[in-house]
Length: 256
Image (cartoon, rainbow, N blue to C red; front, side, top):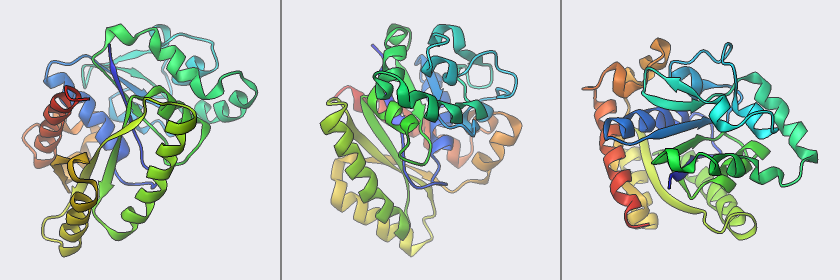
């Protein structure tokens, strides 16, 4: 049975997509079967996986509105060696169309249940807002991975996200829990980064992953080449950070 994790944070620009794509590629390097679900209409995870979002034959939009199954819509990422349920601009229309649909928050969960046995991990890249798309991701997931920049405003946004996860857990998905917080774009020379990191460890304890993703230009360059960072430059500090994170994820799910 696949472990389904939503990568979420209501604050934009915190590395959700970078984390989803690189975790997917890193898990493959550790021998795991992976499906990446792009739930953001911007389609950045799709493009970062080396797939042209403008020419994909099927997308997550068709899956959500019932026009296609995951098996029919998924495409294979040659760059990362994992399957992708792609997204593009038409996904924005799903917000409106789902309003009148029965079980609108559970559409993705129902669709993924049909391919559950084909994967070890299903990773969902959620948009940076509490939308119907994000709710579908949280309702389908067993847990949430929260990428966190170690800066002051990130802490403020974190409390809102934790409250949202608690609401979804209470009303829509009793299986949902916070799997862990991942410190990303970390600058060890910054006193603020060190302080916020220490606060996270003090408040969340074992929920904070040991792996830390440093601020790394090679990770930022990789999407322009249509490659995950762990493939683009496997020996870069960022790639090594995500490989370490993937190993920690595999180890952590054994205790869930």
